[in-house]
Amino acid sequence: MNSSEARVLAAISVGGVLGALVRYGLGVWFPHALWTTLVINATGCLLIGVLMVVIEGAHPLVRPFLGVGVLGGYTTFSTYVVDVLRAGSPVTALVYLFGTLALAVAAVWTGTALTRRVLR
Image 1 (cartoon, rainbow, N blue to C red):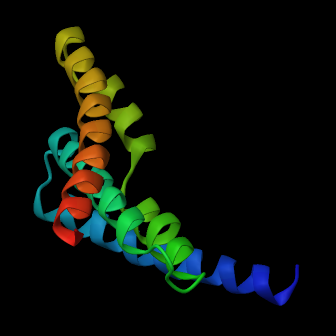
Image 2 (cartoon, one colour; image 1 turned 60 degrees about the vertical axis):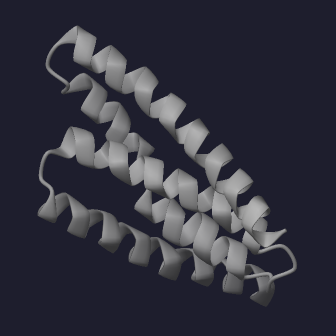
């Protein structure tokens, strides 16, 4: 591994720890995991949309640190899949499964569109 790759890996690692700590804290404060996970993933996707517009031309380590690291550690689509299995009723599971996906895509689009509009 060369020094450039090592810096990217370090940026992702530090960002991932920070994002995971925020996610964990929210899970402690709001222990209803199913809906907490939904809010975390939706807000994380919104922020990813904002970030992709804002960081154009930024330092090369900004995207790995914030996008892959912080927001990758903050969002938790693996927990989302486990939550689908623990949802209780099949109807709740299906609503949660498809609702989260739709909300995540809409959040990225909204974050991108609003940020572009604000920065114009």
